[in-house]
Length: 463
Image 1 (cartoon, rainbow, N blue to C red):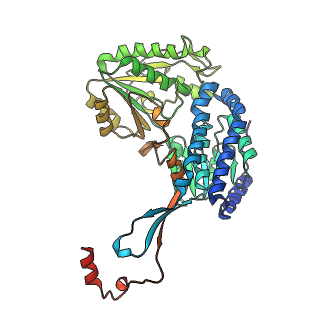
Image 2: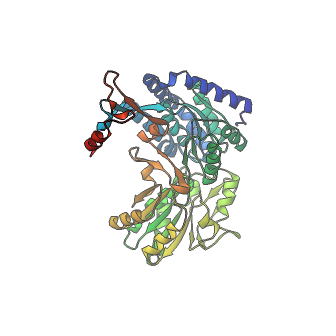
Image 3: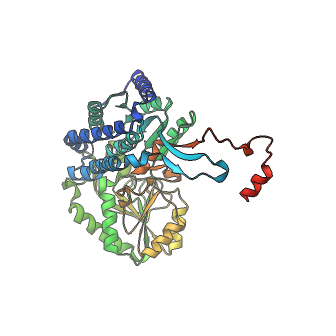
């Protein structure tokens, strides 16, 4: 188990990392590549303990852990190793006539000392993936994993300590008290993945020092299904997206808006697809994750029974001793009910109906901007839906998969976050693009100097 890192230790690491960054060591391109290779080797060395820890904390199978955690990070590292040289290279830019004979360049430089805060739902990927960007850019990094997955957090701490000098990269452990201590310090960038509530805390703390932030938050990501959708395909892909990590995914399908005429057919097909993925009794498969904590179990289970429930429930079996919640559907819940106003983060799927697509879009646009939006139906209609809505990312006739492509940005908008990363954008997130103008000493044109004797000629030249 992990305890709180002491305030004295946090202050010491903060000081050491600022001093190490100031030494200039981390800026060297070959150093950055070497550190990326060290991270890759460390992941390989600790892969088995990571699988065991993810199993202990989340009941996550090795297959799901590899696909949704390990492989995404190792793929990111390899991508950075391939392209870092070109990303970091000084770029030439054209120079307007009035600046000649000067030359213009863009120079990339690391922002400095980074604080990276990660949640519990994908505790390895969402902590180490941003770290790849920090290393690639040339920053130092202090990592804060979640206390809700203590075994994973401990293994990550051991892995980082074995691979890196603490002056460069280190891990601190603990709860919200530690978060407060960290946020009281001055950082050059804060990268935080978590809830919108945590995002507000981070942004408020960062404002005191004008620290740039990247906030990857969450929200209620809708699935819109029209009458001409392929119901089997829609049900299968939504069931998979909701079953992944037992719905404890920031871009999980949160609720369905479906044409009234096909609601019942969709719900029947949804459960067929759930059983095809997980078996008739999902608690028996190794591939279905449990709720992370008793509090999470209680909250999600409340959507299925008791005073917070709203609408008819299908499924709904639970087991508090193992924190198991069966994939379930809540039919036509009230729009202001808890299941429709709180990010669910569990295997419960509200299904609401609409009579026209305009009604569905009005419902989505009347709420906070989600991290993801999913549409099932004709591609042309999907493109229109995308044009008329706003979300961090989106898929047409799919769920989740936009996070996989490192060539497109991943991030939120409005309440679901700000900034984005993956691939080059991870490098960019921890980098400052610095304008550079190089002017020769021998030629010093007089037109820019007072009293502007050549002003009229210069103005005619500029048109």
